[in-house]
Image (cartoon, rainbow, N blue to C red; front, side, top):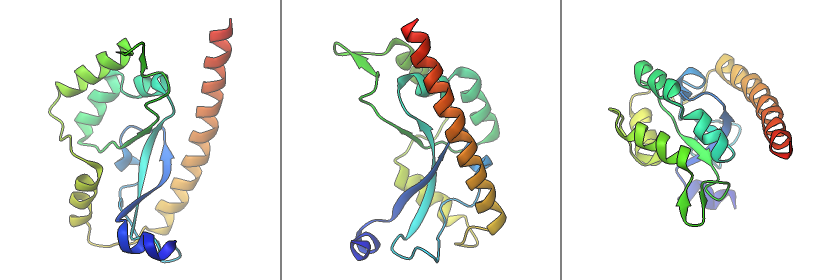
Amino acid sequence: MGDLCAEQIDYVRNLTFSEINLLRVNPSMPYRDPARPCVRWWFSATDAEDADEFNHLLRPQNQERLEDEGGVCIIATHLGKGFAEAGRPHPETERVLRSLSARRGWFVPVGELLDWLRARRADDNLPGPEWRSMQWRWARDLVTRRIAARRRVLARRS
């Protein structure tokens, strides 16, 4: 299976974070990992488990910060989790996406974005300190997201 991946797939998502601007967490993206040669290139993503997390992530102040920083955002989400009801988009999702579309962003497929980032890199590898920082950040973000999700579930039950 690894051989097939190495032959057919350019990019594989690795860690996910709560940060909207991935360059703040993983400026060396995309990167190679010599210890895992079956993947050509790894990349990070911003995690939004459902519509509520997605809408919170793309709130106007985050969009503004992403734009001001000239950042990069690749969102990993599940469109089947609250994004539409009875054939209608979630009203908040519609609002944040309309706001986003009015900005001066470069909205391209992930592969095109990663090709562009890769062409600007002088080195293919991920520096050790960046990798260690990413691992700690991923663990912290995972715990924080799980606690926030649990609170949302409890709030809905109340």
